[in-house]
Length: 403
Image 1: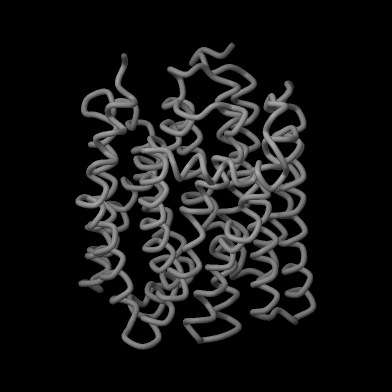
Image 2: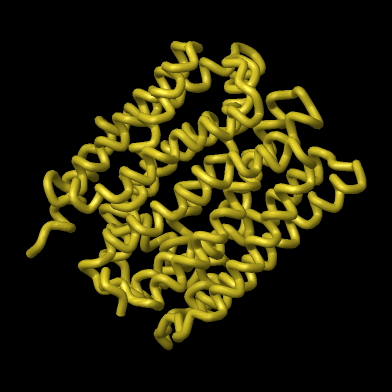
C-alpha cells in the first residue's frame, strides 16, 4: 500500500492510463493539423474530429455487453493494440506521401472503437482497486494525469513533432500505446463482473444497460447533460484549430501551447475537486463547471485579442476536471458491478452519440458565418443547463449525501 492509501494496483493502472493519454494528446493535434494540411474545407476538418465519436453510436451497446462478459483488463489491452493499428495506418500513408481525408476518417473510427471499450470498462476497474470513500481522490488523480498527458505535454509535443515530420506524432502514439499495454499487463487481479444466470438473451442484455440508464432518475438527465456538453464541445473543438490559426493568427506550435495553458489550470483544478465538493456540494461544483464553460466560449465568440483568448482558455481549464471527476464518482457509487459496463456504454451512447452532429454543425456554421459563431452557440447551449438540469442537481446531492 502506498502512502496515499490508493495502493500499488491503482498506480499500475494509473501508469498505463497516463501513457495511453500521452498517445492521445500527441495525436489530438496531429489529426486536425494533418487534415488542415490536406484541405481548407472547414467541414472536412470538423468531420475528422467528429468521427472518433461514431463508434459510440454504432457499437456502444454491444461493447457494454463485452465489457460485462469478459475481463476488463484484457479488453483494454486489445483496445490499445487496435489504436496502434489506427495510428500505424496514418503514419504509413504519410511516409508514402499519400494521406487523405478518407484515411483520417477511417483511422479515427478505428481508434474510436478502442476508446469506447476503454472508457466503458476503466471506471469499473478503478472501483475494484480503491474503496468507495477514495473514489473522488482516485478519479482526481486520473483526471490530473489525463490532463497532463492529453492536454499539457501531448499537444505541444505532437505539434512540435508534426513540424519536424508529419508522420512522427503518429509513430510516437504507437510507441506510447505499446508501453501502456505493457504496463497494463503488469496489473494483477481479475476484473470480470459476476453475471446473473437469468439475464436473458444477448439482445435483452444489450438493452438492459440502455433501459437501466433511461429509467434512472439521475443517470438519464446526467447523460443528457453530458450530451449537451459533448454537442457544444465537439462543435467548439472541431473548428478550434481553424479559429486559433486563422482568426487569431497563432502558429501551429502556439496552438499546442494554448492547449497546454488550459491544461495547467485543469491539472491544478483536479486536485481541488474533492475539497470543493466537501466545502460546497456535488451539484454546486457541477454548476461551476457549467458556468466556466459558458463564460470561456462566450469570450472566444466575442474577442480576438490574444491575452483575452488565453484568459478564456484558463477559465475553460476549470470546467472539464470538475464535471468529469464528480460525474464519474456519481456513476461508480450508484451502479452495481454486474451491469456497470452496459450502463457505462449506454450512458456514453446517449451522451456522446450526438458529438459528431455537433462537430458537423460547427463546421457548417464556421464555413458560412465564421468560427466565432460556433462558440456563441456552444456558450448558449451549456448555459441552459443551469435551468434544465436543476432537478438533476438536487437529486445528485440527495443521493450522494451521507445517510
